[in-house]
Each structure stands twice: as C-alpha cells, then as structure tokens.
Amino acid sequence: MYTRKISFVDKEHNKVSIDIRIKEGRFSMSGNIGGCSGQCYDSIVPANDSQVMLLGIWDKWHLNDVKAGTQRQMQIIKDYKDKETSDKEKDGYHILSSYNRATGDMIGVHYDTVNNEINKWKKEIDALNLWYRDNPPTKSELHIAEISGTLPYYEAKLAEYGKSYLEAMEALKATMLYDIDPRYGDGTLYEYGSSWLAVDLPEDIEEQVDNICDEIEEEEEERKGESVADWSDERLLEYVNEHLSLFGNRDNELCVALIRIFDLCVNDFEDIIINGNQCEVQGTNYLAGSDDEMDDEWDDSLDHYIDECLMPEIRDENLKRYFDTESWKSDAKHDGRGHSLNHYDGGEESTKINGTWYYAYRQ
Image (cartoon, rainbow, N blue to C red):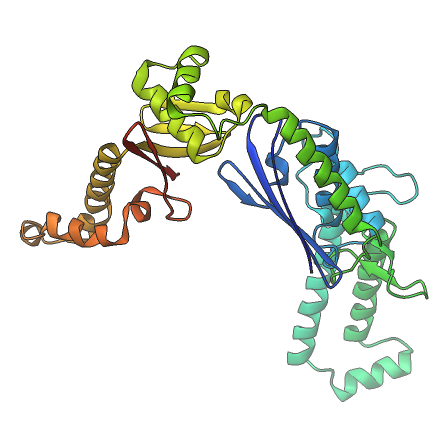
C-alpha cells in the first residue's frame, strides 16, 4: 500500500494536513483544515501551483473505483458546477438529464418536465395493475373483444400507458443521463448513478503524487523562514515583544508557548491570534493558557455541563438540592482536562515557558 502525508499553509494562512493512500487500485485522500476534516477539499485555498495540482489530483482521482458516472458524465457535472450559476448545487442526476446531448446546452426545465411524465405513467400503470387484480375480465368481455378484434380494456390501457412511459424514457436517453457503459464493448447504455464505475489510475500516479508533495515541502521550507527550535525562551520572547506588538507581556508569553507547542517558524508567528484564552493558530481554534487558567476553564466547563445537561433531567426540585456538585466534578476530573476542554480528540498540548506551564486544547 502506498501512503503519503503532506502539510502546508494555504493562501488564507490555514494549516492543511492531508493523508494520501493507494491500495489495490483505489486512490483516497482526506484532509484537515481548521474545523473541517475528511473531504475538506473546498475549504482549501491553494497558495501556489503545486498546491493547485495536488487539489486537482484529489478532485480527479479520490475514490476512483466508486464513480457514479462515466468519465464524460462526471466531467459535464464538474464543468457545470464550476460555473458561477445560481443553480450550480443541482445534483448530478438533475444536471445530466437536463443536458442536451446533441447541442451541449442546458435545458433548465427538462428534468422536472420529463421526470414528472415518467412518474405520472409509472403511477398510472401501477394503478391499472391494482385495478386489474380486483377486476379481472369476464368470459363475456373476452368473447366480445375477440369478436370485435379489439383488445380488452386492461390490455389496451396498459399498451397506451406503456407507450407514453417509453416515450418519456427516450427523452431522457437523448441527454447525457445515459452514456455508453465502459465495462462492456457492445454499446450497452449506462444510467448515471445506477451502479459504481471504476476508473483505472495512471501507471505513474505514485510518482506524480511524490513529485508534487516534494515540491510543496520545498516551498514550505522556504515560506516558513528561520526555525526557532534552538532559540532560548528569552530570545524568542524578546523577538515576539519587538516584532508582533501583542497586548502585554502575558499574551506574548502565551504566544511563545504556542510557537513552541506547534513548532512554528519565524514566518508563522503572525498566524497566531490571541484573545484572552481563546486562540487561533493557522486557522485552527484552541483554548490555551497557564495551568491555573486552564483549571478555571475546566471548572467552568463542568459547571456549564451540570447546569445545561444534568439539572434539566432532574424534574423534582427537591432532588436537585441533594445533588453533590463538587463530588460529581471530582469524579468527572478523573478523565483529565482534555476530556472536557478539547472538543476535537480529547488531547492536550503543553510546554513550559520561564517556569510556567502552558496548555492548549483544540476546540
């Protein structure tokens, strides 16, 4: 199995982390940016050509073995959604069934009109079948039909409704909702979304990914500037005081702690925003501060949980007076601060600056 991890800062100064995997012909990518995880492709604003290329590979090849349409169908959907149109959020079925195969134009009313016709005749046929089940033709009716050379009522109506239904289906087949099924060589039609189609990966896909990721990593090293890993806390704090103009020595010390915790380089410093204990580091929100401050935040968090989640479940006002808040909080604290303060994975980051421990919890 091929795996590759890559991290970079996008144009909006948000930290992006991406996992890439290729296993048994399946290509998958997932990422993390700010508060978004998984398929966060649309949240990333690429800062350079190599990042654009990586996102292009993500968009084109992710889950290449479970495509809802043929390559032509998927390209039509992508091209349409890339346009700045008010209805670009239409799903693939709507788009393709409104796409004129002959002219390449979009016919906005086509899907609703034709699909309504299809549903109408489906319902008519179902109702007719139900009627026939309860009203089978008598021998006399069959005899009269045979003598007159006409079809019995049920068969005549079924033929009429069936003809209208097939005509509506043919209207859809004139669109790109149907394309040649790539799995067979006999011209069989494939309806978008009726199954999963696989698209073979390029033979050099791993080389492509490695080359792009290598280039991104080189650009990141240039972008980040000088490393401060070997700087003393005093030198780093002096640099922060001089260059970042934060509000007061206490905030600047917290800034230094965040620089240490997240291993930031010189050009990353300005991607830190501090507002009390609410902090943002390269687009991701954290609750951060000293040990005592985080204990206070922990108590407040547990108090809010009691008030908002536990107390409303106790209906009897007399019983509420017997609730031992401090004992409950003592038991809850066995899980650690991260369990209450880290809303992402329950973890905790920490470092010691000038004799004071600082902690950060992802929100």
